[in-house]
Image (cartoon, rainbow, N blue to C red):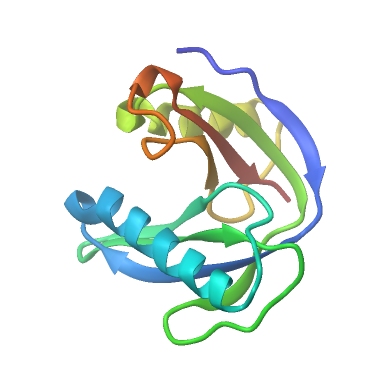
Length: 153
């Protein structure tokens, strides 16, 4: 799959999320668990998400993946328990849309890294993904739409 990259400037996005170290095999289960827990907390607060679920991969180690998942919100809210307040960074990013199953999703991140290198831009933090169409929306993997972002300095 080839990727069309897009350079843009984003404003910081307030989020509520859960961050833990998870195993590779538990990643998809934890994504659903974290987003579900954050959504339940939002409902308790009388708030709604301001966009689709996201995930961010802060690092990979021997114990697993330092993984964060949650929901964007329109204005900052306090967290509670495992649900923490935070933000997706603002500033320059390069992004690409991945269509299809998650099996080859890492190729979108590779395309963004290649774009940054070709354009002499430095990466400035972990990638994040927005799940515009996901398994919960449609069982057909061909319809899944994930937007991948790479922050730049």
